Image (cartoon, rainbow, N blue to C red; front, side, top):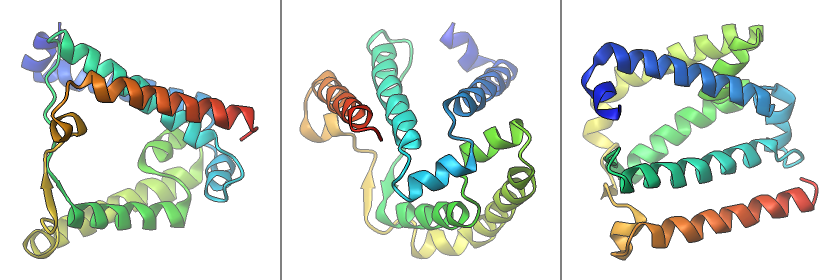
Length: 185
């Protein structure tokens, strides 16, 4: 099934659209498309966003490594650098700070009818994308590759089986989730 999706561009687009809709729906149902929830997270008063994200990280981490162990998918980590992380973080942070939405939550908020997300968020995404695209040639020459750390992953770095990292990480994140629930965050 995965091989068929990989080989057919139209099927990839349809699969991407359907998973995007499902993602937005789940963000909305989780409550993280609400402006007050996001601002509550930034003020360290409402940890709904952290709980949703940690749940997604654990599910995705275990799921993708399980699929890889079955041979159904192949991981292709992208190389990274300190420079690209800083530039991406600044762009993300400015947009997030101005509007109070990240790219995923802004699209979920558009889907639920929030006009601030539609006009401010989508416009901001388009402006930010255009600004980055126009600055990209200079950024690539000067900043983006500074502090290059390649496509390393923790299992590769530690030279261990991936499950020796995935299982303890999933358990640790699970404990963090339990702690957040018990203390009432």
